[in-house]
Image (cartoon, rainbow, N blue to C red; front, side):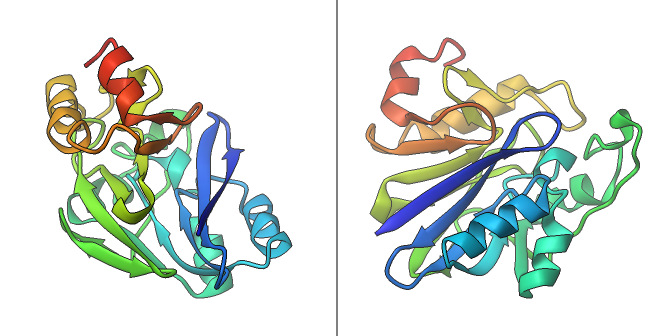
Length: 207
């Protein structure tokens, strides 16, 4: 059974998730945005064995703990191939706007629809541009779970005023890729509380 733990980390309250297989204790870290020591403590306290890091997109507040955790556990870091520029360019990853010029890197760049077999589960990559050019969600069909990053929030959607953003593209991505999922799908977003596809289909003013 899938167990999802989460911490709110960093200066803008980013949700970092640890999705773990309760039987094997293998786990995947999604969007380790900051506070690597807190994330590491959660992993160790639960006896998890991290298998990989998944990035929904490359903004600094979702990736600042990547290097520390990938080095600690020897992990691959997955992001969409269109997100390389966002990760590597301080203007695109918004760190420059915060007075710090930082660059980040993934080890493996994936494509839309790709299936990642990790921790005993299949994570499907869903390309959902609009917040960034290569932003993705990760869908676990067997568990009715979606990690939506900054694409879809409870009652809202990701902001589109950063480089590479487009409200029209974002809403189109959500309609085409996410609202086609079952209503009972639990959505774990990059900020704020969790929701469901059904709740957003009927109650999200942006959709």
